[in-house]
Length: 578
Image (cartoon, rainbow, N blue to C red; front, side, top):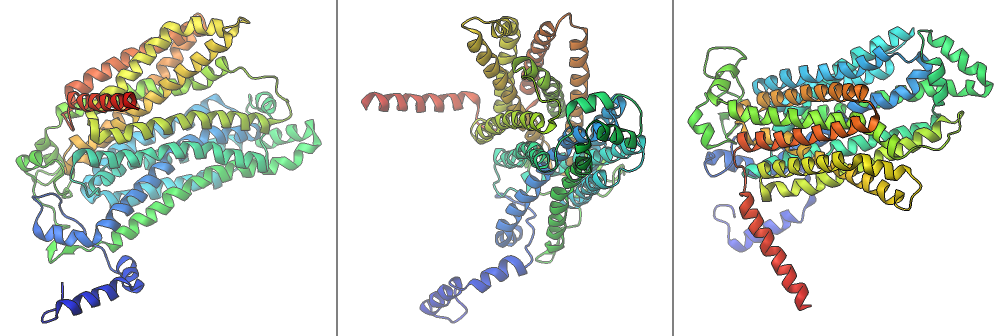
């Protein structure tokens, strides 16, 4: 477009000169304040569509980075305590109650964060609430590495308090990151928006891998206490000084490593603050760069909700609630009543609870299953580093399975639809669970013998168990993404948080139930068989709940099957011709 009265030739020449100049581009990206889109799709106001165009690139990619790194930090802080205890136990004693409280506190904090920050996100806004919850997680992670001092009891009490705060911050990320990533996606298609949330969730896998990768780095540089010291010196309630004196008395050469062991776990836990602190600053900067008005229209003013308009436009513009329990139509309570989420909430909360029940129960069993299938050779009792590094490499391989299955299922979301992908994940999980339950005892017996089929039986068990763990990641992605597609924008964060909290209650139930089954079983194999059959039943219930409560969010499964059949037929014809 040329200036008024300017010839087309002169306008084209001036445009080419501007496009070849680097300075205007840099000033537009870094100096100009991006505007906020207040709507998308054909029914969005013309002012909103024209105002959103210059800022779409920045809005999309800033949201992608913030939500991805936030999920990375959540997974690291969840799993870091299990590795840090390798250093903490020999130095401050091993107490079963303290270990249990460290894990329980994180779960309780997660429930608090999911429910509270989900509602806060619908009242203040996604980015505003993200700054708060990420700051809580970053501060608690830093203090968990720097603050524990004094006696053994003092160290564990401080750790438990920090784990509670980490759980609150991490729980708040669940609904806020999901809502933010889906709503900031510029594509108006529901499944594309859900896919954006799924890609943000994908970064939990690299976070899990980094848990063990950083542990390997610190173990090789600062050392790891030998396991038999932890077992011998970690059963009583002695002081940290007595533990250290016992370690140095065994071998004077160990004295120089004790300082490194203490430094290793502090660095390990405190480094959990890096990711949430960086994205909290990024989210705050995004808020500061966002103007309060678009072409004279105040976008921060809440608009009353109407059930008809929301149901016809599930990704309508988000308008913050004015209060939590007020009687006005713009309060969060009134919006929840208008949304009538009953059936959809049964689907999202019930499916998530059934999935987490089996998933976390199997994660609890993983070390025991690996110890059964891959028994270790005799280890050097004075070398804890080698044993730790070996275990860490095995854990990285298991986490890599999740990466592969996540990369496989996320691209299927816009093609099959979220509902069909979740049903597929539950069906895969049910089939594999029943196969393992029926064949576990015979394959395990064959793998422990000296016959010619022992290696084949062991490989078969490992493959089946790997596929079972991988199938869980399909539903892990979909249970996180479905609430972003089925709930309306103005109550999405609250209802996503309630669904996620139901999942965590299922995780607690699965962990306690499976542990009780193993404890009461006559032998280990019978306990594992019972658990595998239970996982199969849970997956079948998950299929029923998903089928009942989830609306059709994409192409029907029959249409996808027809497209797949046509593609297979064309491939077969081409290969036959060749």
